[in-house]
Image (cartoon, rainbow over all chains, first blue to last red; front, side):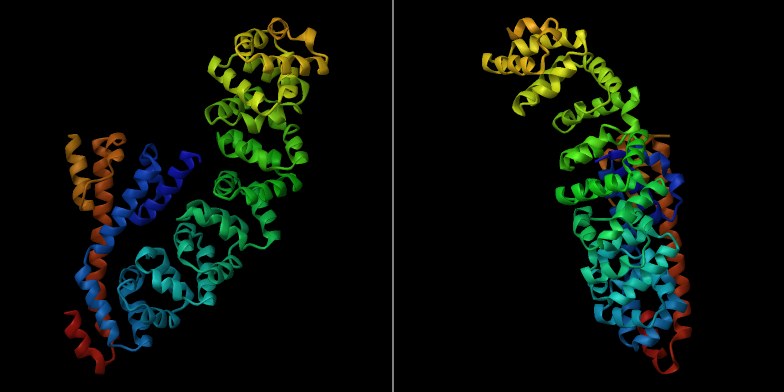
Length: 389
Length: 73
């Protein structure tokens, strides 16, 4: 996962807690997302614990009154902030009764200020229709952070109802700042299939690929593959890969490659971005840093000739340990037919691989030699040929 | 600014030690700014509560007002 994306999401959420524009907290982007999350939870607890005695008295007073009057007091006297503070202190059934008497606009005001952790039971008991009404209003206000905090506390029926009211771009923005992203795979499974394509088009049209890639990163393998297939079928891979390159997010893209079908993987090799030397360097650098060679190697075979030349040149500059790692993966996956044509392109790469190949057991070198023979490359491997003999 | 002052101000506002990683990456002035932001948020909330409790009683029907006032005040 891109730490920069996690940090950005946490700064946005902390800004909401402090009532401060996120831009004014830019200095926090040097902190880790874990520290920012811990800070946000401490700050939230502090705010909710402040004035606790008076808030408890308000909750107690509400027991004396009918729900309809509680709603009037909530709306016209307490306001959204204090109603949110009191919600978690109310008897849950009473809170839900009061909520029934409140309009979606005011409930949305409360939702923005509420700490869902402190009102779990109230949220769980809210009827799906009312959750949907609030989601519609919060979407209209672009309150994605607020909605993202609730997803983990809502049942499937309420989530499904809410998602019908949220546009595709909104779903991406909510998923980005959502608490408990381990639930994202299940949440996405509740979406009708046709909306998945819509979500990806929203990423394309709204410059939301970082959000979409973050979402992808939190899905299970099966759904990752499904979404990447949709992206390929919808002709969105060029847009996706250019955004990944611009934002340095190859670490989120490369692990998905093995989950794609053969034809979609081949389409990756024809993207505009792989014709760019800097982009290829970034891809290879990411593969090295995150050990994603097994995902990347099968594509190399299908790159345009000019791109393969660039890859061979770049690979010649790899550290010895990286070359050893690549050769190890090639050996384990018997991918010599992919690596050898690439090696044939670069004399420097051939020279660099001599000690690595020479260190392989004889049986492996024999396999390399026979593959080279089958591909007609024996005479084109330069100094490497001598260690294969 | 003394590093400890910024960290201490933030700790006071949080009611406990701030995350240690934060102290490593933020300057004393930034820690102080963060503490000020949290302090301001707490003050806003407390002032709103004062106003709300005063207002609440005006919305309570006469028959309930005595009992509610007893609880609130």
